[in-house]
Length: 483
Image (cartoon, rainbow, N blue to C red):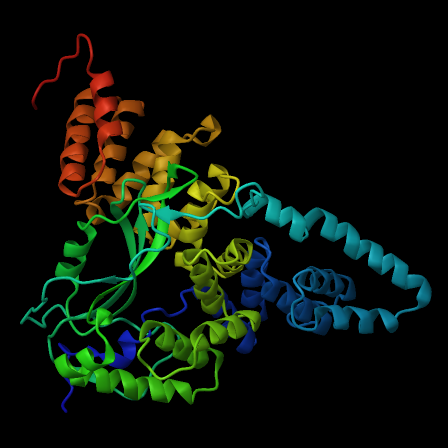
């Protein structure tokens, strides 16, 4: 089959869940290429968030004098920080190193390590950036209109689009694939989304976990207007995350074979090739294939076991996927949140966004908008538009007034404007910014609030709070002129 740029490269699409921790990966590449000055800089940045891999690599740099003067004290400090996370053989290296020192020096070195950990160690970083569990609610479970679980498969109307001009061609972020498996049949696409369900049951933000086989915009548009059961816990409606299988992703094996045998064959071919892979990334992508294509031959729980093994080996994508799986299914919430937190230390955008959401609204942790803003801002700076909206919301509406930063929110709104033309919440936040900014414009506050309410109603959102705010704001002698 001849190559055609309009065709979807299936091998590429199967990597839709690929690792996005560009900074740490680039830093590792610097270390491998012996650019130790650049590697040190990157590891120091990651170390600020308690990344055990960064600690370990910094320890190696100082222990071996790689691009720096050899420094046993700094090496032991960083090994001790990595050891707090039981990372690799850090504790054993410390013990072996101390044994080589004079007896009278060992106590002094231990004191230095302990003093540093008390000021910059795991407990300090956890308290500054990461969630604190609420022991009184940790065993409570979210229900969905009184049901224990949400339906993972969304059955839409037949989706057929004869145009292949807009077929997605995702880039492989971690290396290429020498084989090209092209998909030219524009049949129903295979789409998996992670979605945020708002307290009113509406679908707000979504992240594309897997997509292949054709354009998905119509399928997404249809789905996001479809109301979901309302998440609630202890009688209170809350936000919650869910993973849904749309289009061909909802098909059984036999249905997929009958309706798109080419897609089935190509998925099977690539999955078999991944199963033979030996690198961490190949093993991760195979685990994700088992998770995303559940009809692939596999033992019960095989994908989950593979993800856990890879998470324990330090793969950030596996950490996140395993943690989110436990979180979605409400199994072992403390472990779920820990894995999501650990993956965030590697710069994964979706991890940072999810951790921000957990800190901002999870019923199982002490809500902390300051920590949430840190993670939303980090993801926003990497280009995540969903995180941008959440960061702006905190800057305009934070309960902690020290977090209010209207002028910064105004600048952020300008950055994301072209990406949120259809988002009701964008117009709501824009309205608040016109109300609160120094150059206040009440007419634009009102007009944008009306736009937010209109668009929200069209999307089946509960806009009663917005309407109430508008009503309160326009009571009395208020004059609005059309411009």
